[in-house]
Length: 219
Image (tube, rainbow, N blue to C red):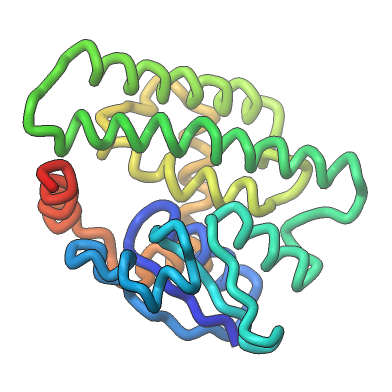
């Protein structure tokens, strides 16, 4: 059994989508980010960084894993799926996973903050993060023009990236001029595991997220 500690965010969806795709039994433990539950001592023993998601594999002596990318790799290796064993194909998946972890996530995350939550609207800052997010989207669009998925087959790289790009509007970034990325986003949105995964632990509620984001900025 996998114990999943999560909230309705792109990083949280990565874990829940992967668990659904892999068909692993899991129990959901919603973390109340607004109350700071992720900073409680009991949770810091699972994830010392005080973020979500985190998992505990009860079949492996309650082994805890934090960081969404590390969780995806662990689950893929545990099941032998969504991450190829061939070194070159495996590398391709990991390259795109790192592209999401080091690029799309951080830049879109900052675009979200300054476009939606920050009390002072600073046009130059908003434009900077939206432009960099759009540039990264352009890299994805260029690659997807000749590829169905980010690597040879559907993988953890697709899961990680889709979880963020699917809410591009929340960062104020359009996909209208990115047809290949749009095709990919829409295709993954039809997968049962993606449909289910983004409702864990609850559906995304923009106003609830807005309130939480503003609270974090003020604190």
